[in-house]
Length: 150
Image (cartoon, rainbow, N blue to C red):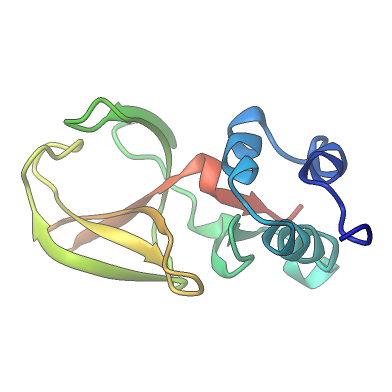
């Protein structure tokens, strides 16, 4: 057990890279998960610049070229019916996602759009939502569940 790093040691190393909300997510993570996140962050290469990854597993979700504005903004803050507040960023195509549940318009954050839960295809953590209105489709990804390659 003495060879394992404490969660606090991981937090100190990751602190410069992630916001407080990321650290709150990481507090519940094991050393193995923290090591995988740090390794994914360190292994980014010039060819990966602009990639957007799942913070939990490092799976590539999309890239910065898919960034888009919806209702005049890229970033939105919403709360669900349970009062949980989400800060989401909007992207067009997100090939690194998979989806669960049926599309619904109940409690939609974007008028006229139906939504569906989006999961990371790598680890199946809830990563955001897909929104659709006719042929118009975009994704709202939860900001504090993303890692950005710069």
